[in-house]
Amino acid sequence: EAQVTQNPRYLITVTGKKLTVTCSQNMNHEYMSWYRQDPGLGLRQIYYSMNVEVTDKGDVPEGYKVSRKEKRNFPLILESPSPNQTSLYFCASRLKDRREQYFGPGTRLTVT
Amino acid sequence: EDKVVQSPLSLVVHEGDTVTLNCSYEVTNFRSLLWYKQEKKAPTFLFMLTSSGIEKKSGRLSSILDKKELFSILNITATQTGDSAVYLCAVYNNAGNMLTFGGGTRLMVKP
Image 1 (cartoon, helix red, strand yellow):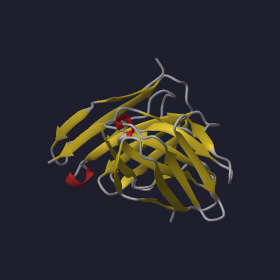
Image 2 (tube, each protein chain N blue to C red):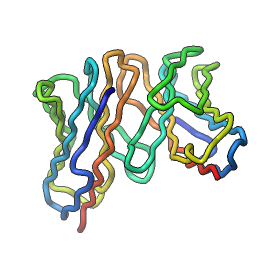
Image 3 (cartoon, rainbow over the protein chains, first blue to last red):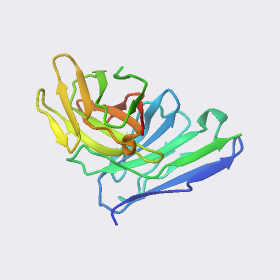
């Protein structure tokens, strides 16, 4: 089944404890992206990647890192999480020549 | 700064009603506009529009884009309870890499 998977789906952590949210897609998509969704603010793009080893900042990259070592994986790294990073995170992917993105199931992160 | 604004913020209707959701945008070098439906999970793709005046249709849902006035509408006819969701509008800028979302319209359809 063609899909985007994220792990973990739910995470509660403490301020300053490094964490990684994984994202993987099995559709051979070149483009992958991370979003966060907050009430009243909608979905905001954190980082995106056009292909392996090519990443760029979105609208809200502060406090996040990404890497794209393989085409199928695009992990989101929070080196020192803070409470303002409590949010619902979505990973998405698409083919480079198409515009419709396919979203993962979401990761609900709480930082205390 | 790119901006997408959706209205209304929320809407409550009864089954069988017709609804119109609005999306206006200010984007540097507009490329395309997308509509998504989000229930209690990830957004799912509905439509993509790139040209003015051409209606996209899928069953009871339809959408149209006006590039001169910088807006799009999403129509849902004969609404059903299964249409209850948040509807998201998003716009790609010129490079086609950055997708800017609106805040969404929460639609509730009552039996």
